[in-house]
Length: 344
Image (cartoon, rainbow, N blue to C red; front, side, top):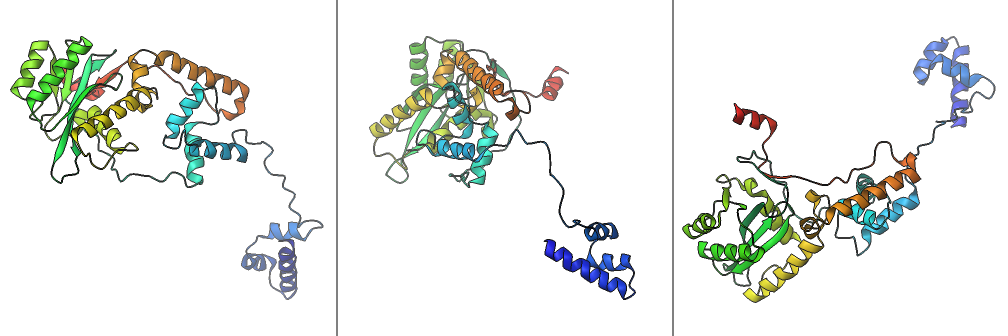
C-alpha cells in the first residue's frame, strides 16, 4: 500500500513539473490535493488512525460461538429450536446467549436449513371470541386421516385438546368417520375428567355437526363453536397440533394395523404432553401448564436471566427477556377494530 502511494506521488510530481496543474493531476489520479499534500509530507504515508477507542461489549467470542454450535448439535437438543433450547438451559441454571444470537450463529455456520416442505399459512379474521383463564374452559377437536399400507384406506384419529394448556385430553382411532364415534368418545372424556359446561370448538365436518354429537353437547351443557366454512384457520389449535403430530421425528409413512396406529399415538401423547416445549405457552410442556407448574418454572428462568445480566451487564443493551406467565388464551380473538364494530 505504501509503495503504491510513493509511486503515485512521484507520477503526480513529475506530471506537475511538465506544466499540468496539480488539481487536474490529482483529479485524474483519483485523490484530492489535500490528500497529496499529506502524503507528500515526511512520514505522511503512515496511517496514524488509531481506530475506535470503545470496544464492543456485546461482541460474542469465537469460543462462545463454538459452544452454541456444540449445544445445538448435541443429541439432546439437535431436534429442538433455539427458542426451545434457551429456556431449557435457563431452567438448568445456564445462560449462553439469547435466541436471536443462537439463530445468527447457526445461520453463519449454515445450520439453519429447513427440513420440511411446509408452507406458511395465511392469517384470516376470526368470527366469535372466547377466552380461557384456566384448564377445561375451552376445548378444540378435529379428525385427521392416518395412512395405512393399503392405498385408499385410512384410519381416522379423533383428537381433543385443551387450548389453555395445549394438552391432549383425549383421543381414539377408528376405521370410519361418524357422529356416533365422536359422541361416544366425547362422553367418555367428560366422564373421566368430570367436566361440564365447556366450550367445544371444531370445524363443520359431518362428525362434528351430526345429530348424535349435537344432542350430546346439549345434554352435557356444552357450548358448541364452529369454524366458518372453508376457513381452516378458525380451528387453528387443532390444525397446529396435527401438524406437530405429522411432522414430528419418527412419524411413520403408514400404519400396518389399527393397533399399530394406537400404540404409536400413545407414545406421541406421552411425548407431546410431558416433553414437548410449546412456543405459545412460553416453552413449557402442556402438562406443566395444565397442572400449574409453569409459574415456578418461568420464575426460575427469569432469575437465571437476571443473574446473567448482573454477572456480565455489557452483554445486555436493554432489559432482560421477560418469561411472563400467560394468564389468558383466546379462541378467535377479535382485534380492537372488530370489537368496536360489534359494539356499534
